[in-house]
Amino acid sequence: MDITDNKENMTEAPVLLSVRGLVKSFDGKTVLDGIDLDVRQGEVVVIVGPSGCGKSTLLRCINALEPIQGGEVLLDGQKIEKDGKNLTAIRQKIGMVFQSYDLFPHLTVLDNITLAPQKVQKRPRREAEEEAISLLKRVGLEGKAGSYPRELSGGQKQRVAIVRALILHPEVMLFDEVTAALDPEMVREVLDVILQLARQGRTMLIVTHEMQFARAIADRVIFLDEGHVLEDLPPERFFTEPGTERAKNFLHMFEFEAVR
Amino acid sequence: MPDLGLNVLLKGKNMQRLLSGLWTAMRISLIAVAISMPLGILLGVLMTKKNPVVRAVLRVYLEFIRIMPQMVLLFLVFFGTTGAFGWNLSGELSSIIVFSLWGTAEMSDLVRGALISIPKHQYESSEALGLSRSQTFAYVIIPQTVRRLIPLSINLITRMIKTTSLVLMIGVVEVLKVAQQIIEANRMASPNAAFGIYLTVFLLYFIVCWPISMLARRLEKKWKD
Ligand SMILES: Nc1ncnc2c1ncn2[C@@H]1O[C@H](COP(=O)(O)OP(=O)(O)O)[C@@H](O)[C@H]1O
Ligand SMILES: [Mg+2]
Image 1 (cartoon, rainbow over the protein chains, first blue to last red):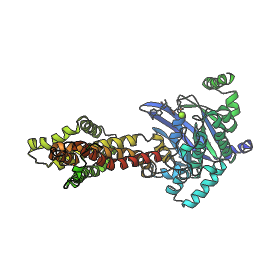
Image 2 (cartoon, protein in one colour; image 1 turned 30 degrees about the vertical axis):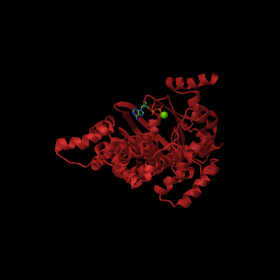
Image 3 (tube, rainbow over the protein chains, first blue to last red; image 1 turned 90 degrees about the horizontal axis):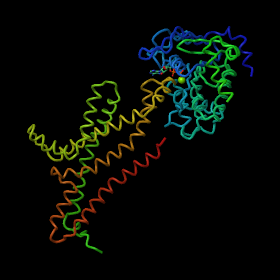
Image 4 (tube, chains in turn brown, green; image 1 turned 90 degrees about the vertical axis):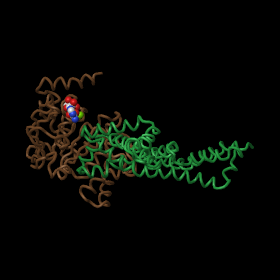
């Protein structure tokens, strides 16, 4: 992997996504309490933290699936707002893949992928289908274009979901524990696709519990707990000498599992 | 072979009368279905809205219609309105009103069930792809809802058709009533006619409802996720 080569000039790449003082609460309960986070062009940021600390919520706020109570999210300097009028345009620049399989069950793989390019971006069907097929080839699923989601394994579904996001040519990809619901033998095929995207220099924000994967792919690891960013370190530092006790305890849980 | 009294069917216009009785039953169900389906869809969508007053009112309506035996509803509309408001509704009109009220209530519950069975993630992943709210409904939510709904509503339609046999209780001359009349008229000449005539009625209902049920089953299979 030559990801490390790119990392040299990472600090000079322009900031693509900027989260400033983000506050999010549900019914008065504050989940995110002033999050600041800059993601540069081409950077891969992995977000880790205990279950329920607000990782999914953070991604959902970035994509304006949740209204926020304070702060702002900027993509290319443009503000992302839940009811903003340019929301559709901005959302095309953000690709998101969820933990649950969320393909549209009534559409074939090909139609799942080409729906948004046709209806949102008004691209001609032929062109969208051609790109869909070539993307499917890249994730090893060219034979599945005519299949329905119910005919696919979990790993295949997630790869299709990734393709469905990629075809819109997003500037940043958000991944929310995309392998958490998969059988272990299917985790690899999905992570490999994400690694491939990292090699192409894609900007990505990844929530995962796969620590080895995090270590391999991340340019920076963010540790989220109690509504705050407690750590923001390169992976080598985060996994060997995290600055906070909480992060140490968090990592310890994984070691314990590894020893067993 | 035992005498099933089938010869009675061939006497005079008996078969024709049975068929016209069947048509009366069909007419009542078809009109009621035509009214219930759109109204049920409308109410079903309203039931998924947040407004608590609207929801409570619709809930009470649904429960009321469900708890009442259809026969009681028929009596209520046919005799009750005459006493209470001085209306003089015909048996057929009363039947159409009752079946429309019932069909609308059941249909709204089916629509509500189909709508809330679509996972939240379907809305979110659609919106995350940049589809607007109305595009999300048009291309993602409604097609899935319709697939769940069609087999269920076809079954509701066959239930409505079958239940029209009750309307003879308020004097509507539908197929079962005609059958009784024929049996009654031939009691002396063919005392065994009852079996043959009722068998014919059974077959008539079967011929109408079976293809509809089969269609529902086929669609259900085809659209199963
Ligand atoms: N729609 C919601 N309504 C109320 N509380 C929510 C909602 N979504 C998430 N939460 C709460 O916010 C917190 C963070 O959730 P989440 O972002 O899913 O955590 P994570 O992804 O890190 O496991 C949890 O305490 C969760 O219960
Ligand atoms: Mg989560």
